[in-house]
Image (cartoon, rainbow, N blue to C red; front, side, top):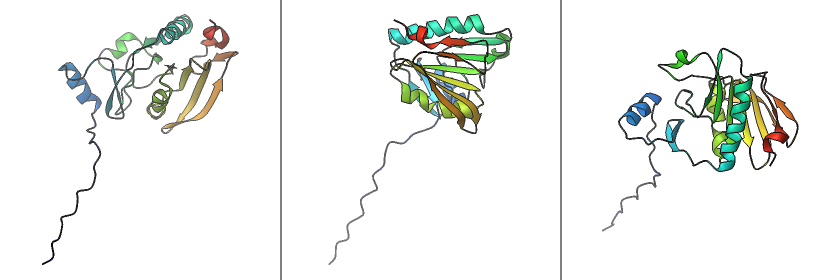
Length: 190
């Protein structure tokens, strides 16, 4: 008599159940999704605490942006932008419109997005695909430890056609918000 053993089931990884933006909002309203999270590509990620250096860079850039942005644009800090199956909350963003335009829905694109990267560079780089796909004209990744700024421009599909690294030192002017110029050396001066 021959005994036939049943095949072992194939190894499986954890299952991921993607969420839509609408489902994420509903679960958040019911208290099932914690605050300080971010929806990226249908998955909820917990945001990390911010270091003092991160907060310093955010405040310095926020002050510069608020002084430079013309009428008809809003400067937001850590507020959502709805990008399909993602709703990232960039450290800073400049959106066209007034507060009333976003009473019932988050912006779906931005002129400029700034992510401050002290310890989260790869995570913040992962957001570039969503930003490009939804037409964010320009994205800056502010690399704190390196005293540099990576700039991404000209969204084409789900990537940017142009990228460059600026600094340490020198100045950088946004093409999406031409009134906004940063002295990179002064931004990172201790």
